Each structure stands twice: as structure tokens, then as C-alpha cells.
Amino acid sequence: MPRVNGDGVVWIDGAWHAEGEATVSSFDHGLTVGDGVFETLKIVDGTAFALRRHLARLRRSAAGLGLEVPRTDDELRDAVAGTVVANELASGRVRVTVTGGVGPLGSDRGPNGSSVIIAASDQPAWPESASVVTVPWRRNEHSAVAGLKTTSYADNVVALRAARERGADEAVLANTAGNLCEGTGTNIFLGLEGTLVTPPLSSGCLAGIVRELLIEALPVVETDVPLERLGEADEAFLTSSTREVQAISAIDERVLPACPGPLTARAIEAFAEIRARSLDP
Figure (cartoon, rainbow, N blue to C red):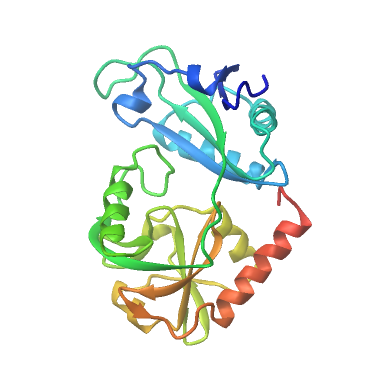
């Protein structure tokens, strides 16, 4: 289904809809209780980057919630590609969302199974660097949904709003042990005494796709980092599927000595090399 009068196109459960006419039920569990999982992929040269890895993570997150993904990977690949083409996007973002489907107004799920929604949009370019602040709320690394990419993003909304009110671009959270965990939509890497360090998945952070690719490509130490060690970082950067690698300019208003520092510059270069080799690494 092509765009009509500039209106975008959305794929819902196997059918195409004009963006202005696309609907889900008022009883959809993703809406009523945040029962769902999702993936956001960067569109590069008209292709969803690292689709294989994103679909694998989508299924891991869904399994963690006990949700069925009612489409094969091939069906999802075709739907993602079709959504990008239908929206005439050479660059931007595409999102795959799986919800609990129509259910009662409570935590129990209904009998009708999951729904899948795929939508795409433009993505403004991220600045080359970002400032971050720590916030008082904690990630619960013992939670039933720790490390899962769920649609329950209220914690992130509150934390990011607090960061913006302090003039920062991103909020960084510790876990219940007081160790560095992640940002509201990012993983974080630090340069500590010349070593590139990032929190382990056991911290409760998301298994980010860019994080994963960089760990495969570079010497990175995955280790618990007490939150107070942020004050010792010589350099730092954020990663996410749309940001890729973004240098951190300041942490809690402390301007970092190097932005980007040498470890950050190498990470930017390494990721560019990965993307140049393959759009589905």
C-alpha cells in the first residue's frame, strides 16, 4: 500500500493501513497495562539495520513475558521491508511492536493472542555529543522484566523528563546495588584509566544491539561500576540503535576532559566499519 496524500503506512496483523486510519482496540493489553515488547531499528539506505539481531531480541523479550510472536521471522522481515518501502524512507526508524492483544481490563490476558504492529517514521539526526545526569530512581536488576525491551516505559519517561528539566539530554540510572546500569534509551560506556568499560547484562541493562556489536569488535570490559565512579571517567559515550555511538560531553554538569576521547573515537570508527561491511551484521 503506497502513501496517500503524504499519509504514512502502518502494518497491523498482516494488513496495511493508512496511518490516519490505523487503529488498535481500546482493550489492547499493550495500551491498558503496557503488556508488550518492541524493537526500534535504524533505516540505512532504505534497509532496516541489523534486522536479524533485532528479531532475535524481540523473541527473547516476548518469551520473557510469555508472549507469542504470531509471525515467522521471514514474515516479519517482509513486513518491515514493506513498511520502509511503503513509507518511502531512505533513512529514519522503523518500530516492531508485539502486544498482548485484546484482553480484559486487568492483568489477565485474553484468549485472542498477540498483535503485531509495524510503523516507520523520519528520525532527526542526533547531535554528535550529549550531556547526561544521574537520577535518583533505580533499575531493579531482580525484576521479572529486567533486561527485556517492554512497552512499559513509564520509568524512562519520568527519568528523561527530569533530565531535560536539568538541561541534560539523557538520564543515567543505577541499579538497586548502586552500580551503573543504563540510560533511559541507551547503554553507556566509560573510559576509566585507558580501559573501555560497560555494565554487564547482570546489572539489569538492556542487551543493546550496538552495545553487542561493539563488544564483539573492541576490547571492552563488562564489569559492575559503582555509580560514584562516573566522576572518574576520562571519557564516555552512549549507544543505541538510532544514536549509534554518541560521545558524552558532561556528566552531572562535570565537563569531560575529552569529547570524543580516543576510546570513543575508536568506537565510532569501529561501528562505521561494521555498518560498511553489512547492513545485517
